[in-house]
Length: 371
Image (cartoon, rainbow, N blue to C red; front, side, top):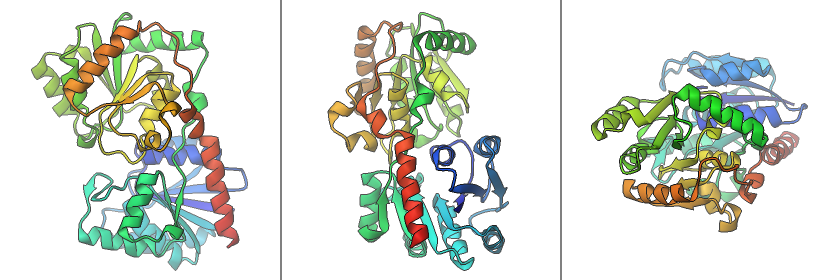
């Protein structure tokens, strides 16, 4: 079976990384290619390194209608059995192009949808109308959480057209023998300029307003001088976060790594993962922190909300406020000597293992292709 994934861009984001991870774990008979409408970034490079063919459509903007016939020609010439679209712009253009090219099995994964927000942008009547019109051109929409599925239903998408298949994590990448973890921890702390005896809080994600990393900067100012904050990711909020840290007198205690490919290694250098975002549709970073054996303090994680509390006892949900994070981290600091072995994998990690998720998606592909 030949499958074409169509995505808006391939910069390092959660949806883009999820595409790469899924393709790695789909069975060999489902041969995948990827087309980025724009911005073939670091994930495109990683996909090509994995041997995946990546096309770049060169789209100039949302209203570059000249991209549609080019996309139709690409889909038709590739003789794909199934098209899988990701993210709003690719959903609009990709579903239509697939239909015009004669592909009847068309899947779309909804990665980031809230009642009034899609991919961090406010939903207008026009945006919603276009979304629903494009949705009818597909076969099935995959929701990554029950929260996303419920939003789709509230918008008027029939339940029979929605399939719940969560995001997945590659648990093996985040777990390593104690000796290896200790060596990685020492190396990364030295590289980042972190004192070996410091207590390190980490945040992972794009530096955008919705991630609310300013909460962690404010909380850092209330913690003891041995505490450090490491933010892994890039984005437009970097300068504002740096200015905030300077104003609070904690800039020398904060490390901004930029975009990195070695997130599992970086997690080994941390003592706790903190995720103050209040608008998540899944919470992939929280699960990756758990997979790395870290205690986690978070403000939103639908993936955990859908499981019993016993599925992740080392994760605790707290308000997205600096005082709440400072108090929670201070309490955790007293319980953690920062040299402890990683915590065991909680049941939630196994529940969202990528092998299980890829098997569910593979079964959906086969079912739609037969139909």
